[in-house]
Length: 421
Image (tube, rainbow, N blue to C red; front, side, top):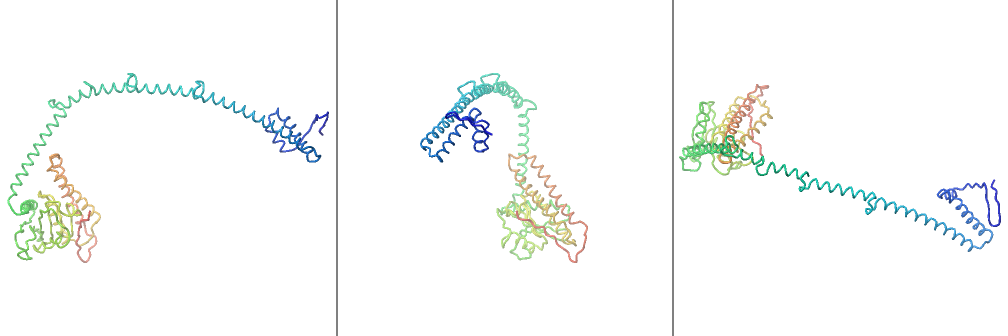
């Protein structure tokens, strides 16, 4: 129970307990020394309000007192806020003012300046103990006058010193030019021997004839030059420059071309011309050998089109030997093969490899005319590719000769066609 005492205008309240959330929230945010004063102001405002509402007290007087109370509270709050802001500004200045050496920013700037000066000094070439200074000393020791590099270069590039690089290079160049001179003299001699005809293509036909006879030597085959001899299609039809008669009584006709362009299909195409050559010379197979890379791009250095083969051979006879052996193998197997039991994937792979090696062989063969190309390396590559070309043809022959699994009622002829591209 609260005890209330009144003495004049002063009111004393003891043991008063008020259960009100709004009053509790208002007092909870006040410092302990301000809570009693806040309760006094609340009672003054409440008392004046009650008197105004029920007892007819002058409203102006109440408003003036309330206003004074609000002004006092606002003024005191502003003073407290200003005090807090002043303290914050002071603390901020002490920690972040760069003009104060004791501030955090001031100390950080001092440390950064010291680090920057040390870093720049470590790369300043004017200081001998800096990284750049030591690096330049090492470079000068290696590359400078009378340095290690100069001494080594003098020894390596001395043309008179035994075993020096320049001496070995000079000797190698002399040997290469000697080999090139011998090769050119040999080629010039061969050109003199084959330079017997005056009409277009006859010199190339002479080279092909020599290569043919060398290829079939000791094999029982007979080579006949028929380019100026009439055939079965009439006196004016001379298509088919050579005929190779095999021991098996099969015949292969060979057409030699030395032109810049050869069409593949159509009435004037080489495939139809080879068909006419087979009919004109009573042949079972046809080969067109071109002195230049005149076929369409899809043919490449070698292309197989049924019973017709297209090859590029500049006259040395390597690709001609590959084409002739492949044609002979296909003719032999077309007559005695009783089944189509052939690994087509294997054949396709080998034919692809055959075309790749033929292209490589052709490129290397042409590189012999370039002085900048190593004659020794190219010659070794030619011999290796030549052997591998013939080996691939033998592999194809062995695959076709595998034991027959099932014998069909009629014979099957295997056509190996060149793919475009």
